[in-house]
Length: 153
Image (cartoon, rainbow, N blue to C red; front, side):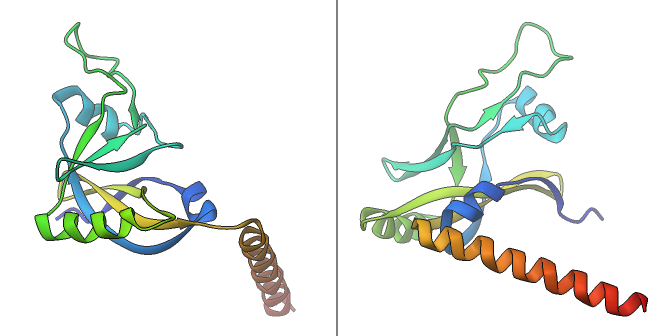
């Protein structure tokens, strides 16, 4: 039985945003899109989710055309529909309408052969928050080096 196979992670979103809440959701894809995603041919640096008519749409998510297909290929930049329950959409809609919240894809992975997205409800970090994150990462790296050095003695 296949476990979760991570395809991509949005590290930039984790640095630029404070993640308040995250939720796993499915995505509606066309035939050749699935093969391209499984091959890892995706780009999502500026992607975000938007709630339109009680449906969640992922925009700015680029899936390259599948190189081994015929002329019946997909549009790489089309908006993709995300699959969520009505209650979850209502909850996210209330939060997004508040000032400063946005929906950002955090992870893309395969779960039992289906593409899943970890969608995060995020709030933008201020510059000093980003500096604090960098400092914390540097301190942890130094501690890990010192610990490793002590183990080798």
